[in-house]
Amino acid sequence: MPGPIYAAFVHRRFVVIDEDLCVGCAFCVDLCPLRNVLDMNDKGDKAFVKNPYYCAGCFKCIERCPSRAIRSASLTGLDDSA
Ligand code: SF4
Ligand code: SF4
Image (cartoon, rainbow, N blue to C red; front, top):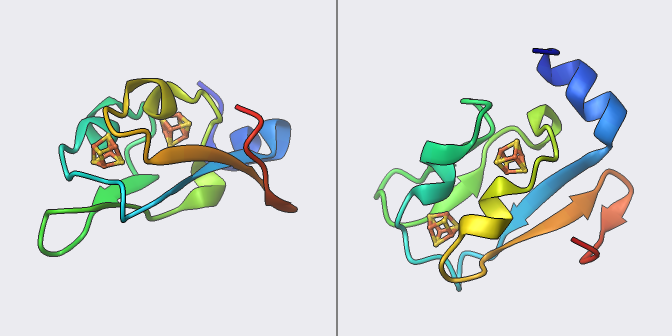
C-alpha cells in the first residue's frame, strides 16, 4: 500500500469534521484504513482530523458517518463535492 505522503500527493483530498454534528460514535476512527488520520478528542466524545495530509481520500468515513458530520476538502480549500 502506498505511504501517506504518496496518498496525499496523488489524491489531494482529505476530510473535515463538523464537531457540532459529530455524535462521538468513533466509526470513522475505527474504519479508516490509515490509522493516524482521524482520532477522538481527549474526552472521547468528538472525532477530529489529526493528520489531514495522511488521508488517502477513500471517503469511507464520509459514507459511514451516521450524522453526516464529515465532508471532503481539497488541499486548496473546502470542497463539498464528495
Ligand atoms: S463517524 Fe461521524 S459521528 Fe461518528 S465519530 Fe466519526 S464524525 Fe463523529
Ligand atoms: S477519507 Fe479514507 S483515508 Fe481519509 S480519513 Fe476518511 S476513511 Fe480515512
